[in-house]
Length: 362
Ligand SMILES: NC(=O)c1ccc[n+]([C@@H]2O[C@H](COP(=O)([O-])OP(=O)(O)OC[C@H]3O[C@@H](n4cnc5c(N)ncnc54)[C@H](O)[C@@H]3O)[C@@H](O)[C@H]2O)c1
Ligand SMILES: [Zn+2]
Ligand SMILES: [Zn+2]
Image (cartoon, rainbow, N blue to C red; front, top):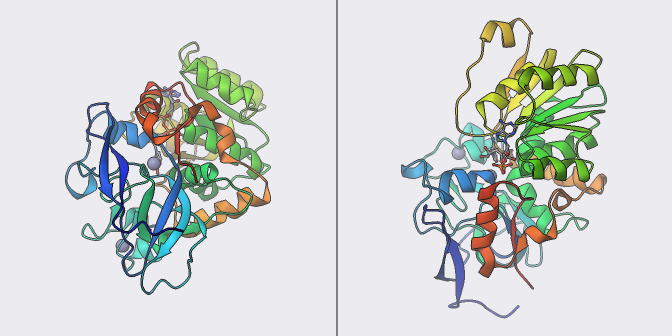
């Protein structure tokens, strides 16, 4: 590859008023232990919309640092390695696990850099350090997860946060051929849970949403067996339908991917006695009768935040073995070049679309 040292590139930042701005940045140079990645796909997550695009939620070291290149779901190809890089090499196709940590705390040593407890060293791409909405990105060697040959760069981008999050929550709860799955919220994370839940063995996958377009997409792609519109049906009606579909038991596993308080309650109430429920939708609140809903039904409730570097590798292997393509949960009409990124964010914020992704040419 031609050297890009000293070149500039165009990158997108999010000012926090539902707009996107393109600015010029120097092409970064990899330091010790770092690699330069030519970004090939960089998708948009619901968290980008909620915490950065509409407004900058979360201040200080946890929040988006104004002027930072956005995008925390990058995948691409390594084009340069810095001094001391041990394992990765030029030409490797990789997913960027999007958070770098101190490397020493308990969470980092377990591979959960997402929950690194060092506020000084923890940094997420697209929030505190440059993200994937630009043609080049520098990251640490130890957060590069190899992308299997069978997977596309868009598949890789979808894994960096969304599919990784669904994978972690489902595998933590345990899904197999004896567990039906209820998913509240059929946005990109909900559809990831649907695709993975089915492949992990769930005989029946039931979903809910309030967007007719999203319900239609989930059904048309065969990702859910049944899908209910919470705007058209009352909670009791949906619960009664779930009972009818499951021999009166409800679902052994459930996952909220919406962050809506009522959807969290539905996920809990739709879980079978002794079953397990995970919350991954972020923000908001929840209010329910703890004894009646949780304790007396012997439920286990999980909170789950993204995944670990190792579990992201497991996910890649699983997708490769099952010949699954995360990008099939969306459609090419939602994949845009960088100069149309404003449109991609507008659509993602409107909430009826498939998962939006910025794609870069060779
Ligand atoms: N826990 C984590 O590590 C993690 C990682 C990534 C994303 N997230 C969060 O997961 C959530 C989903 O992400 P996404 O990218 O799919 O976002 P999204 O906002 O596109 O999807 C949310 C979906 O929930 C639906 N919804 C809203 N209210 C509902 C209700 N009452 N019942 C059923 N469905 C309802 C919306 O119509 C939408 O389709 C967001 O809150 C995001 O911030 C969490
Ligand atoms: Zn995310
Ligand atoms: Zn740490």
